[in-house]
Length: 356
Image: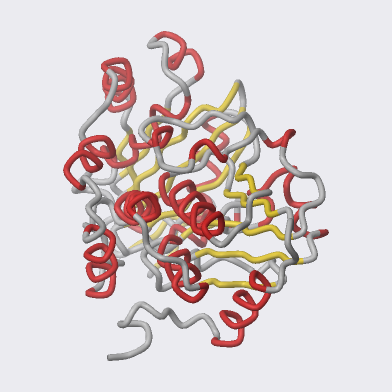
């Protein structure tokens, strides 16, 4: 069995050794800050809190976890073990002795926390985005990993941290959310082996899955209906593979008394469009500011689109932040997708038609 198949991802052995030595080399009373990306999802929060709980078992008691922006943790992640370790960005240690960063594809996604990582004597980045430029002093980055939680598990094992039920629940939530409940192409035998180890601790898998995938406030469901009623299908988009997109506004959120996080899962209702390889949801953050989710069935590398627009991700799933109008955002995406094709083997590109 290869190292990757065994769960020891291909991050260089020297990087793993450096990370373990750096953590074990921290002095007593060291101040440790853990951070994940803005608008955190299940993988970001679960990976971060799982490691935070593990570090606490090693005796690190001056420890906190945070993310940029308002300290709003969306359901169902607000009940994760270790959530009590979360602090607002402005309350986080301004000069930690060590900083560990989770699921952050680019340093810009750390917002105002980026300078703390740059200045920290120990800076470790754990991530699985192919677009990650390795911006940490120590980088545990594996684009083949199904979730950042795979890297978190790898670090905890190498640090000798026992796998408790609380740690397992955090890592399982992270793994399940980033694999779409184990549906995506990133799921390998090693992913199921990791899930089996986590489940073996006794975590309530059925309850966790219901919270993650089968529980939505009625207001959120009505918002989904609004968004789906606006769904636009461009069959010739994405080089003829199809482009489906929709959006919501801050006014829509207010009308249904829902926070922005309530529509994070909306992309999963747009992704299944049979006539489109690329799916897109433009989600409101505040007036004129958007968080954009992109998904692909494999014909188009949406990470390349997201990176060009300041974000990151994978071939199948990516995202970025944007400002302007919805039309501005969608036009920018269109401009980076393969040019639309027309019947007869012709392609429209920048207003000109050329033979393929």
